[in-house]
Image 1 (cartoon, rainbow, N blue to C red):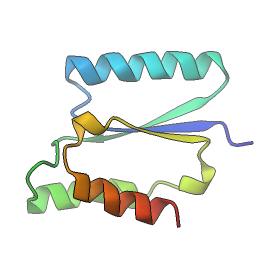
Image 2 (cartoon, helix red, strand yellow):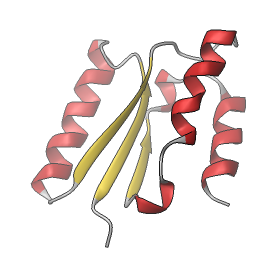
Image 3 (cartoon, one colour):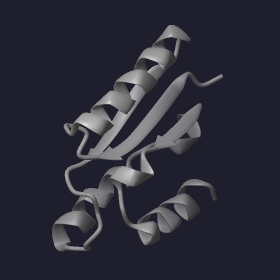
Image 4 (cartoon, rainbow, N blue to C red):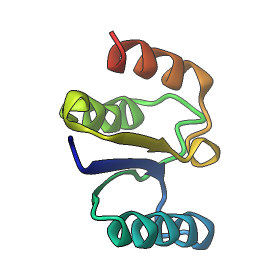
Length: 91
């Protein structure tokens, strides 16, 4: 069984994201899971060339190697991005 949990969020340096990520990491590690964090520096609410470049982080994640994928959706505010990502991840 894979023992890796990926957390995807934007702006993890903000207090709310940091607090949630620490809680997830602590809980996961207590149960023997490794944690991988994928951070975007922007919220993705406005599409720009920079934001499109940041999306490339999702193309290098080996989804079949994960036990779980946690998305802090409130930190990444673009439904179109997540609809496209979930179609790609769960083929």
